[in-house]
Every structure is written in C-alpha cells, then in structure tokens.
Amino acid sequence: MKHWALFLLLAIGCYVWQIEAEFFTSIGQMTDLIYVEKDLVKSLKEYIKAEENKLIEIKSWAEKLDQLTHTSTSDPEGYLGHPVNAYKLMKRLNTDWLKLESLVLQQTSDVFIANLSIQRENFPTDEDESGAAKALLRLQDTYRLDSESISKGRLPGAQHEGTLSVEDCFELGKIAYSDSDYYHTVLWMQQTLKQLEEGEASPITQAEALDYLSYSVYQMGDIHRAVDLTKRLIAIDPTHVRAKTNLHYFKKSLEEEVKSDQTRDEEFYQSQSKKKVYMQPENYLTERDSYEALCRGEGIKMTTQRQRKLFCRYHNNNKHPRLIIAPLKEEDEWDSPHIVRYYEMLSDAEIGKIKELAKPVLARATVRNSVTGILETANYRISKSAWLADDEDPVVSRVNQRIGDVTGLEMETAELLQVANYGVGGQYEPHFDFSRKEEPDAFRELGTGNRLATMLNYMSDVPAGGATVFPDFGAAIYPKKGTAIFWYNLFKSGEGDYRTRHAACPVLVGSKWVSNKWIHERGQEFKRPCGLTEVD
Image 1 (cartoon, rainbow, N blue to C red):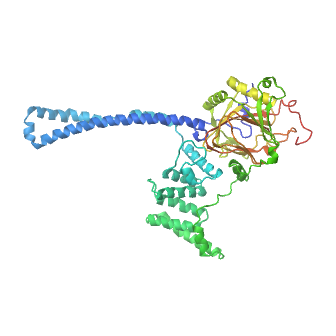
Image 2 (image 1 turned 30 degrees about the vertical axis):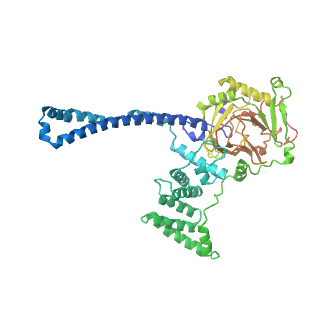
Image 3 (image 1 turned 90 degrees about the vertical axis):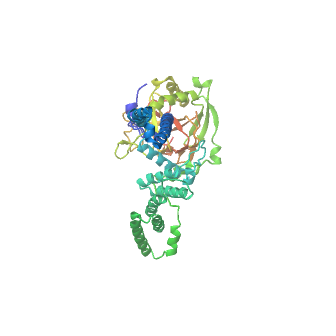
C-alpha cells in the first residue's frame, strides 16, 4: 500500500499535524485531562494532610509553652530560683525554639508544587480556553439556546450536570468582547447581571458587568439603552471615570440620532431602551441559516412522496464472495443524490482499535486558504484528525477491504483512512469533498484523479447534535455507532455533483468519532464506467 501522507497535504480541506495542544478540538484527547486533574487533586490532598500534621505539631508546642509561660511569668524570680527551670529556659531559647522555627519553615508543599510543575506541561493554553468559550457561543447560535439554559446546564441529552458561575458567564462575555463580538457580549453580561441580582456570591461586581454591557449595547446600535445602563453604572460607582466619559459621548450621539430622524419621537426611543434582544450581525457564510436550521432538525425536505422511494435491503454487491454469507444491511437515506447507510459496517472491537491507533497521533486539522494557499486552522473546522495506513494494523486493512467489497470500487488509489474526533462544539461547516474546476491542481501530485466517492463511518453515538447535513437538498443524517453512509461526489461523466456540499453540525452533547475513506477516480474505469451525459 502506498503512503500518501505527503501528498495529502494538497487535498482540499486537508490537514497537517501541529505541536500545539489545542485540547478543545478533540474530546478524545480532553479525556486525558480528567486524569491529570484527578492526579493533582490526590497530590493536593496529600499536601493538605501534611500541612494539617504540621499545624497539629505546632499547636501542641504552643499549648505547652502557653501553660509554661503562664506559670513562669506569675513569679519570675521564684521560677528561675529552681536550677532545673533556669537550665530549661536556656535550652528552650537556644535549641527548642530553633527546632520550632525549622518546623514552621518546613516546605510541605514541595511535592505538590513539583507535581504541579510537571503536569502543567499538559495543561490547556489560553488558546484552548478561548476556543472552548467560542465553541459554547457557536453552540448557542446553532441550536438557538438562551444563556440561562446554558448557564444552568439544561442541554438535551446531557447525562451530567454542568453549570456556569457568575465568573464563568463574565469570562464568556469578556472573550466575546475581545473579538469585538458585541452580540454575545450583551448576552453573557446580561446573564452575569441576572445571576448577581439573584444573589449568587461572586467577586465580580455589577459595575464591572455594566461597564462591558453598556458599551456593547451602544455598539449594537441601542444608544438609548446604553445611556440608561451607563447611568445605572454611575449610580453604583460614582467614581467610575470611563462611565462618565461614555455617558457624555452616548448622550451626544443620541441627540444627533434624534435630530437626524425627526419622524421618530422620544416615545420610540424610550421603547427601544427596553429592548434586550438583538439580532446577530450577518455572517460571511450565506447558507449558514439553512445549514444551522438543518442542524436543529428544521427545514428537512423529507416528504412522504420521497420517503416512498426509500427502501431497506440486504446488500451483497452482486454476490461478492465475502458478502454472500454475511450481507450488509443497506438503507436508503436519500434518493437523489443517492445516499445509503450500511449497518454493522464496523464492530465495537474494530472501532476501539481504530480509536486506540488514532488517539496518540490526533492533531488539529488545518485547511488550505483558497486565496493565499497557506495551510491554517479555521473556526469552521473544529476537530482533530489522524491518518491510518493499511500496514499499521490488520484492523485498518480489514476495514479498507470491507469498504472495497461493499462499494465494488478500487481501494489502491484511495486515500488513507482518516479518523476524526470532534471537540467542544466540534463542527465542519458546508464544504465539498471533491475539487472544483477552479482548483485543478488539488490532487495533481497524488495522480489518482478527483475524489469520486465518500464513505463516512460513524464510530460513536452522539446524544445531541453532530448530524451530517446537506443544505442543497435539505437532508440531515444522524450518527449511529457502527454504521456508515456512502455517496458519490462525481457524476459518471467526472463532473462534480454540487448537490453533495455537506457539513458536520456542531456536537452539542457527547463526543463524535468518525472515520472516512475518500475514493479516487483512477482504477475505477471498469468498475464505474463513464456515463453518456454530463449528469449521468
């Protein structure tokens, strides 16, 4: 089996491995952090125990000496008149107090600090924390979750509780603010204030939240409310210099706005000041609305008429020797373009082995910038991936062979098996698997032609989110562990089927593992002959 790793860097949406941790892009690797934290808690408890023992010993000294000094100070001369007492005073001050000093100065934290220093090498970075925060905001937008639901941990399919404190909400707002994302800043500073007003104890003050909120509201165009919020801020903290400056500026801006639009009276602006819900700014991705709607289960165009065309069957690929005795269950997911799902494509044991092989080499995926040609990380592709060759393990070879048996296509010219694990809010926004005419050199060095077909193996169930959606024709296909979906990216003529533009929806709850096989044109000349028309 040829090793295509070097050539795959030229593929559309291809990946490179990076040194950075970027834990938030892979739930699989984030699980290691759970055990790191558990080890640190154990080390911390040992340190606390050592400190407690130290304090017990110091307290014993203090109690003994307190009683002794009470007696000695009641009659100093009489006390020292006893030669033993005089000797013991000299001994205590010359020797015993030095021992106590050594005990007090004893560093019981050394072991804990040493362990912490070692483990810190595995800690997430600022980028990880920021990435995880932005992932929460992305989930909020895609699934239209209100800040209260996220803060209280009320998520569909969640098996464990997870709530956000005032500090957490405030930090989310600050991260959004640092990106000039005033829409989310408003949402999370409002939630911060709400939890403070409900009495939650926190070092964060209302004044701090109002400072961010008032300016963000102004940036969202609600000047009247910005004035009201700034007045409230000054009432809480009359010494807030920036608030006073902002108030003057906001009032001036409001006066200019009123003058410029005489058709709107003061009553209109008063009503606007009560507005707390704002529209999110337009995004660069024009199809985002339809894509996110499909992720929520909205806009799916599965009609009764179309459903009648979909069937289930046993598939042996024209009596393939390895499938005659054990045919696969095949189910139509969509009629045109034809998308099928195969059940029991991977066993639990095979899935476990593939994940075991991939996990140590998972690395943040990058995509090639279509303008600069530079490989870079992208917010629309949040996952980590690894490439597995046939010779890495018999399981990989067996899975590749099974894909060939089921599809009837040549595997020698296919790419390596790619394994991906999606992180917090992990997603891949709408994209094509094949190269378009404006990208003629995408697979030139591979020498295997374009990506003819895609086999996508689902290696985990996902409690909420994580669907594969096709915005062009309104299909949403949900992960089922052990199953695989298959479709052709190209017509028989070799022309790209632009309907196959698809996306991986953000994972709301759970961890999504997939592996995919991109099958290329070369070697398929007699297995899938050319059609007579462009769209055959």
